[in-house]
Image (cartoon, rainbow, N blue to C red; front, top):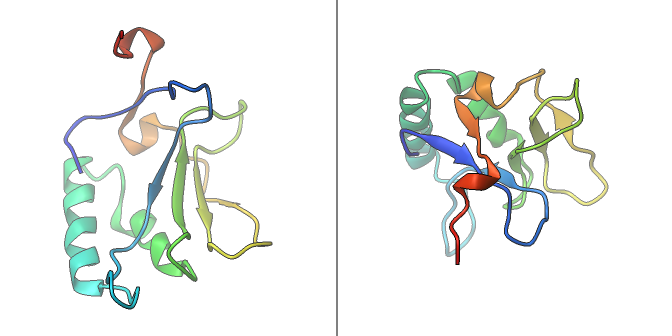
Length: 117
């Protein structure tokens, strides 16, 4: 929910993916709709509405806690960076229109930005 969003590559060379999902109760995993809607409004506002409420509400389509919106740092040319997955094994990832990171207000982090240890 930050004001500046940057996706850096992972330190172990695996794909970097940001997952957005509804808030759920830790007790029974039920969707916490009121809290989720408050968070979605904050995310949309802080992205200067690049992540619209309509885009973010795709996460409500998830069938379980593993489902939601997945935003990939790097994709093949011509593909969307934003996908929905229901969370159910066997279900395919579904592109959400043809969003780039820039369309969503996210910066593609350069390797030079990685912390040096």
